[in-house]
Image 1 (tube, rainbow over the protein chains, first blue to last red):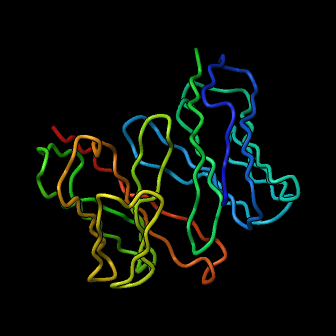
Image 2: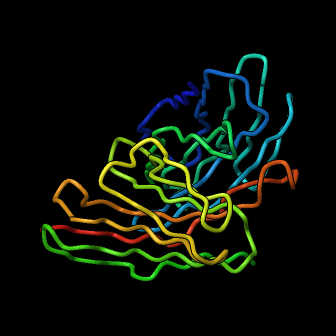
Length: 110
Length: 116
């Protein structure tokens, strides 16, 4: 059974600092996703990672995938307040299903 | 742009009522999904459908049923609402993973259901 674990689940950080969110998953998969959710809003797709070594960047966010280690990271560079949100990692399972982690609630202090 | 819409943003129902949550997508996606989201539990899959009139149970189907009579519409039904079904309900849609490389799910705005 595919399980997805994110850590940390809650992160409070200062503006301007760098940090990394980790996503581990338990069985082989060829698809990994990162989503963002603002309070009271729905999920917005950030990155889709499909191969070992894949790296994608958008602004201050960079996601990478190591399929051998079953690990993805979401790195935040020089955080700004606008990046405060909950970030979900999700992994493609069988039958087109996607299994979600519990989310990392990121709070960036001015 | 993909658009997934849900019939209500907020809904308040009484225990024992039958509740219908509607989801419509305009991208001709084969797959549609219903999740519920609760604090500390992430998103949990209730049901999904990979074609008209086809459905599969997700991780927490108890107390729910679904209907997909048309490709663009997927309904979630709470036959007899209970207080433990108070939650945020999210609908999503996608192409099949084998059909498109850049496969991902697109989410609707969510329905916050309160059962009193």
